[in-house]
Each structure stands twice: as C-alpha cells, then as structure tokens.
Amino acid sequence: MIIDVHPEFGYEIACAVPYANWLHQQGKLEKVVTCKGMSPYYFFTDNVEEKHTSRSLNNNNNGVQNLPNSWIHHNALANFGKDYGDLSEQEKIKANGWLDYSQWQMPDYGKQFYDKSFTTPDKFIVISNRYNLEHGSAPVGYFDIEALYEMFNELTNKGYSVIYKRPKNNEFICDSNEILNKDISARVIGNDEPITDYELTTYFENVHLIDEFIKDDYNLDQLKLFSKAEGFISMGGGSSILCSCFKKPVIIYVNTSKDVRPGYFDENSYFRKLSNAPIYPIIDKKSEILQRGYRDYNQVYETINKVFK
Image (cartoon, rainbow, N blue to C red; front, side, top):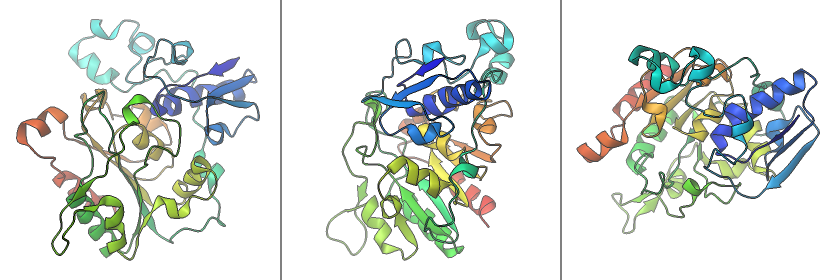
C-alpha cells in the first residue's frame, strides 16, 4: 500500500506515521509520499518520497481521508459504532481524543534517535512555543515574554538548562495556520526598546535557542535533541504531539481546537498512546482568555514545580 499525505503536521504524526509503521510491520507498506523534510519520521522504511511542498487543512484531499483515522480528535464510528453526534454526553467525553488503534503502531523515536555523540546540555527541558495564525485569526495562545521569563528562571534555578523552540516557519513545510512572520516582544525594565523572545534567551546563561543544535537537517537534529530531553513544556497542537513521542513528561498549555473538550487527554487519548509519556494538560480556553483579557499561566508554573524537581 502507498501512503500519500500532506495534512497538518500533528495529523501526520498521530494518524499517518503509526498507520504506515503498522503496514510496515505487516509487510504491506509499499511507499510513503510525504512533505519535504519528513523522511526521518518514517525511518522504518527506505522508500520515502518527499514530494509535497505545502500542507493542506482540507482533510478531504490531503490524504488523511484514506487513513483508518481520518479525524484526529476522535474515531467514534470505530470505537462506538455510531457517529459522534449520536453519542451521549458521557460517551462524547470518553470518545474525545480516542482513535482506532487496530492498525496503529507508533515507532519509538526516542530509541531510534538517541545519539550519545549529539552534543547537548547534560540536563535540559525543551520549551516549545508558537506564534501562529489561529484559523485565520490573530494569535491568542502562546507563551509571552513574562511567562518565558518565569519558566526560564524557575527551571534554571532548579539546575536545568532550557532549549527554547519557536520556529520562524521557514525551517519546514508549513500549513496556512503557520504563516505569520512576527516577533513575540515586550518592554522590560532597563531597555529602551522591546526585546523579543529570542533575545530573552541571551539573558540566561543556561537557556539556548534550538538553532544552536541544528546542523543540516532540522527534523533529524530535532528528533536527536528531543530524544535526550528530560521533559517538555509545549503549546497545544502539532508541537505537543511531537513532544509526547519520547516517554518523558510533557506539560501542554491548551487554548484552542477540539483539544479543550472534556476527556481529550484521558487514558484512551492518542497523546497517551504515542509513547506512554506522562501528560499534564493545562486548559486555558481561548474564549476565556478573550473574556478576561489575559492568559493565565499560573497552573503551568505550579505544574512545572511538581513535575520538574
């Protein structure tokens, strides 16, 4: 069978990769056709064509329509025998985030890409941020300068190094939500001009930009880097899905999409199945942020203190 996909990154990791790996294990995978730069994620097969130069949000023609799981947020038909709209409220809570795992085998990225020769700090946490369009609207869900300062300060005081990731979105093939070339910035005491989140990392001895560790292949080096991390703090979305593939604790700050539904991160969730990593979701709904006028990171800080000693 040929897998030919170019959906959102999260869809590809959670729906396409495990199916392709399952087919490979069954001796049924002929070829994978994917986006530029995605070959490392399909390390289990030699027959990968990096054909697509853009990602599509249209799940009717981006390839996911041909997968056992064509919708990342649930597979009610497979697991309940009826459409999501026909489920009771309790069934919907159970269904949220629950995929069909009968043809789903996630590869072990942590084992495959762990490389002792890949130089990193001895003990580090990855903070994965974003500043993207949110389905055509201005960004609301992201870690701002104040939050980053608090996290950088807390983690480095605990003896961790921090590797900060916020792509400029020219490192890989993007979808339409990822097209926004602006900085996260704020004025700080002692500076005449606002500083950006990238510049903030230079104020800490043990905080590094991910760019310091990327050599030639962004995705390959990122997988090597993540395989050596002690844990992750991530915005929701595709980056949090990738962070959940390495059997290490993941704190996820969730604002938008179906991820805010009750039960989404429960035991049947694909987030739990990706590597059996400990997952700590912090739900701060976009609607509530807009109503109150600010993002509430307090539970993020509290969870950092509990998870990363």
